[in-house]
Length: 332
Ligand SMILES: NC(=O)c1ccc[n+]([C@@H]2O[C@H](COP(=O)([O-])OP(=O)(O)OC[C@H]3O[C@@H](n4cnc5c(N)ncnc54)[C@H](OP(=O)(O)O)[C@@H]3O)[C@@H](O)[C@H]2O)c1
Image (cartoon, rainbow, N blue to C red; front, side, top):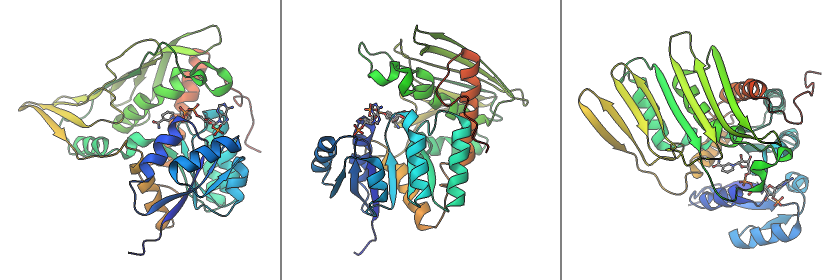
C-alpha cells in the first residue's frame, strides 16, 4: 500500500515503554525502529522482543542516530526534562510520559524550545486521547447535564510491594505526580483552571506523599474534590455533575471501557469501541500532527500540560513535597 511509516525511538525499557511499544504495533503507519537503554543488554533484549532494528546503550545516541522521527520517553519523571530538551534541540519530535517534567518552569522551557526548533512536543497524557473520555467530554459539551457544578475523582491503589520509584524522592516518587495528575486532568478538562486550590497530605519520613486530598474552587461556583494515594484500594472512579444529571466513569476511570449518563430519563451505559491497551491513540494523534507539520497535538495541548504542572507545583508547595529543580531559575 506504500504507507510512509513514522519511525519511533523508544527511550528506556521499563514497564510503560513495554506497554506503549506493544500498542504501537496496532498502527500500520508506525514502526519502532530504535530503542535506547542505560544498558546495552536491556536495549538488545527489548529490541529482540519487539522486533526493533537498532539498539543503543545511551539515550543521546538514539536521538543523534538519524533512525527515528519521534521519540517516546518512558523514564522516571526526573529524567524527562533533559532527554526531551536534547531531542527537541536536535529536531526530533517528542512524546514524553506524564508528568512531562517535575516543575512548571521546566515544562514552559520545553514548550519554548519546541517552538524555537519547530519540533513537535507532547505530553503522553493518554487519558485525553481515550475514545471513551473523548465521547464523555463531547457529551458534556452538549449541555446534557447542564452547567457542571462538581467533579469528584480519585486515583489511589495499594500493592504490598510498590515499584521502588514510587517511594524514591530522587525518582520523583509520591502519589501526586504519578496518580494525582489524572483526577487533576479530569477536573481541568471538565471545569478548566480553578481560581483557588487547597491541598492536604500525609507524607512518610522520606517526604513522599502517600495520601493527598485536593479541593478546587471556581469563580463560576463549581468545585472539585480530588484524591490520590498509595495506601488504599479506592473505587478509582470519576464523575462530573450538573443540575440535570451526571456523567460517571467506572473503575480505572483514566482508561475506561464505557461511561454512564444519569439524567431525568434514567441511567444509560454508553459503550465506545476501543481496543489495545489504549496507548496507540496518543501515538496516532502524534503521528497525525507530525504529518500536518504541527508542533502541538490538538488533543494533548501545551496549555493543558503547563497549567497542570503549575497546579502540581502549587499543590506540592502546600503539602511540602519538594523535588530537585524547584529552585532552578530557567528564565535566563
Ligand atoms: N501512561 C501511563 O499509563 C503510565 C503508567 C506508568 C508509568 N507512567 C509514567 O512513565 C514513567 C516511567 O514509569 P514506569 O512505571 O515505566 O517505570 P519503570 O518500570 O521503573 O521504568 C523506567 C525506566 O526508565 C529508565 N531509567 C532511566 N533512569 C533511571 C533511573 N535513575 N532509575 C530507574 N530507571 C531509570 C530505565 O530504563 P533503562 O534501564 O532501559 O534505561 C527504567 O526501566 C513515569 O514518568 C510514570 O509517571 C505512565
